[in-house]
Image (cartoon, rainbow over all chains, first blue to last red; front, side, top):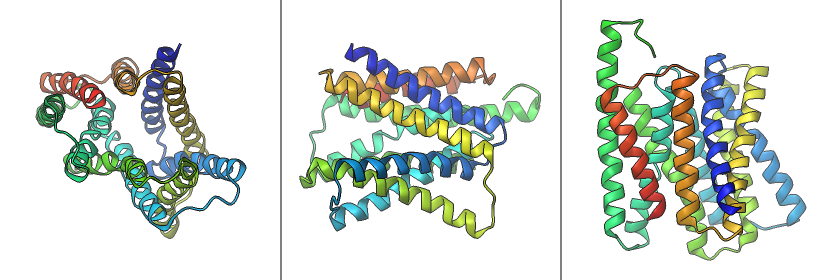
Length: 152
Length: 139
């Protein structure tokens, strides 16, 4: 049963990426969409905070990193939404997920986590994948310049 | 422009979830999670909304509805993963399935709903990236 919820998680996130592209096709403003997408969870989390732990104190250093990484997330969401206006949602979404390699690498440096062979292979593949995706972007741009009606 | 946006996505999205790891490393109580996420979402909201309001941009029904759907799907995904973890499925199983599954769904939708055609290098990059994110999740 737990495995089923893992797949449901994947489906839900996949539909999220699909919904964002569908919104772009309906000419939704990228910034407005990100604001709305952040407003609802912010409200929900505020309600959860007030209901579950009334008067809960948040240490200053936790508050500071919440602000910094919250801004990071919103900037990433906005960049993704702008990118799918002229790029492929498949590539943009993959890039969003490939970004998991960055904290994995930072953790090795910051927390001295063990650099296993599997981790080295994974991070290496992230880099190789980015090279291929960038190469693909160049190839598709050239093809589009030759044949502008040749698809997205 | 595309390359710049991809670089921004890689760096900012990658680090956006790192705070939870820092909190865990500091030994901050689990109860701080909700206030943390409230500030996290509110900061992101303010970072985009304030410049938008300053420019006098307007907010439409399309953005409100699609944004609400996006928010619901995001929370739905998080809850589903949390339930899977609480039911004893190891993280190295849950994360690759959820992340790999989402890439598969978006790739399928990109082809069938939005007519996206991938060049050979992009398709190779997609396949390698798919394997890479699963390996990052496992490792």
